Image (tube, rainbow, N blue to C red; front, side, top):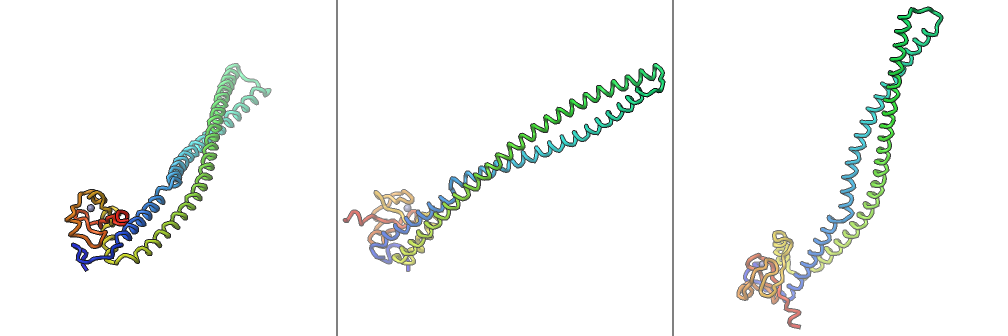
Length: 253
Ligand SMILES: [Zn+2]
């Protein structure tokens, strides 16, 4: 059953139904698009990126913290050694044993050296302690931010899911309406409409407005309309292949 060149005439109101079908498809497309562009989805993607970044920073801080802890442990071992050596010399000096002047000078020099080293070690320990405190504060701040983002993420997810549920319900309702509209259109017309719609940016039925096809925006001659007419209000655009619908209902009323 060819639809070419007006071979088969369809009921006069088929154009009206085709436009309704097209509106219904536009609505479904719009709703599907809304699903992919929910602001909450965009915000959630942002949050996930920030969380990934923060997780990498947290790992970096932990590595630094471990390095400081190792340095602290090594320093403490050196401090213990210095303290032990000083004790040995202190004990020697305070013993009743008699030492030569040279021995006393050597021991005094050794004790002085150990005292200086002990002070240096103390300074180094203090600096490490400050570094560690700084790191721990930054880690704490990071964790607070992660907690806040996580809470925000949960809230956004909840809102997004609720919106998606509502959009899905609207889509279902539109599809139901589409099925009802389809009952008024011959199946071969629907088949052609769907085929064109798939390859022509979602538009299978275009209005004929001011002598132009609103689908491809090219001029359609009255001769072309006449030769492709398949119903009182429906012809076919010879350029893009879309159904061309004339608004005969408003103009005639
Ligand atoms: Zn066209």
